Length: 256
Image 1 (tube, one colour):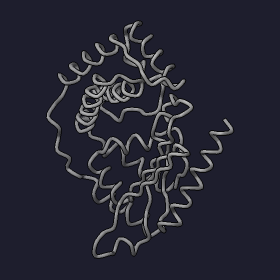
Image 2 (spheres, rainbow, N blue to C red):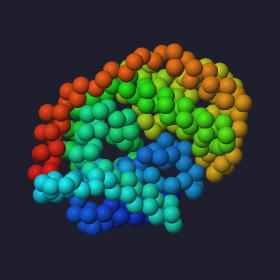
Image 3 (cartoon, rainbow, N blue to C red):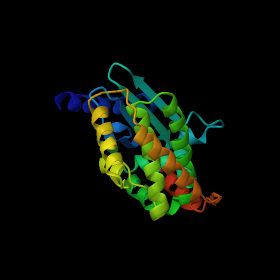
Image 4 (cartoon, rainbow, N blue to C red):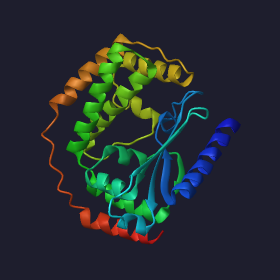
């Protein structure tokens, strides 16, 4: 616990350093990896995602600058990836599922309450179930292909998480929850599959990398097929929140 607190303190210090070095203000920073799900191992990385803004003059350049900031430190198992506010709001207008996940993270390192609350108010309006369903299904299928070539604990979890999101969207037609370990069991009706998932999570948390389960392989294939059968043609996003997001962009940048 002391080591974890020390690393979290370093993360906040590093974020402050990025603000100074890049002349930005970080509006929101969170944990987005296995730690957010409560299934990290002692050697798991810290996957930090953040949203930031530059000062107003930066956006008045003839040629826009880079809209992402990345930093990696292997020694501290630390990976930071940040999006500029303009990029963030454009992606929200496109119903980008990754952003919805970040905003639900149970572990946060920095929050501008005014910006965050306004952003949250817009997320339910921006969310498109059909776009998200396609997104998560494609991720699940891609990860499953890798899993079949090389079965690992990380690979199984990377396949199961988007499958859970698909199942949630099909049932509820709203934003799937993020960062709750119990979601892995939410749609499981077979005790044998439930036992395999429990075993998978335990092995992941103690640092075991190699793992294989024909029961989970079969469950994944059957579930992916069921999800495919529920697909509709994605509705083209109308970008109906452009005016509201533009106002949020202007007020946030001017407030720097």
